[in-house]
Every structure is written in structure tokens, then in C-alpha cells.
Image (cartoon, rainbow, N blue to C red):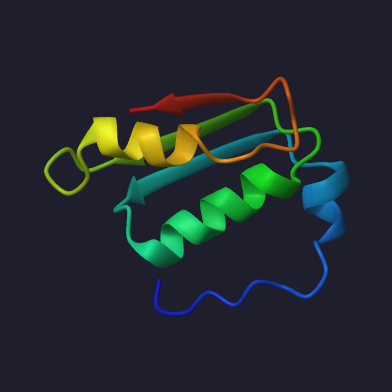
Length: 82
């Protein structure tokens, strides 16, 4: 992922429909982190967010700490790390 430009308005699908997020090959780079935090912050109906990383690239504890402390629009959203 080279560039992430946060949209000026939140896409309707994130606000009203997104219930599950699965991110494979998460590296923890700033752009990726910003996208995941953006989704967590705006997805009102998100039930689960599963983040899968390469063990050697992103220490799971650091990933957990960074994303778990992010604000979430959905009080019931469960973060899972693999």
C-alpha cells in the first residue's frame, strides 16, 4: 500500500453495512494502520475485525496494543489477531 488518502466523507457501506473485516498480510506500516483505525472508527455495525500478520514482520503484542487502543464506532466489535 503506497498511498492512503482518507476520504472526505465516510463511505455509506462502512457506516451502514460493514460487519466483518479480515485483513491478511498486515505489516503494521503507518498507511495500513491508518486504514484499519479509520474503519474501526467509522464502522457502526462492525462485529469482528481479524488482522493477520507475518509473525516476523509485526510483533503481535505491538499490533494488539496499537489497534486495541483505537476508538471504535461499534461497542460490540471484537478484534482478533492471527
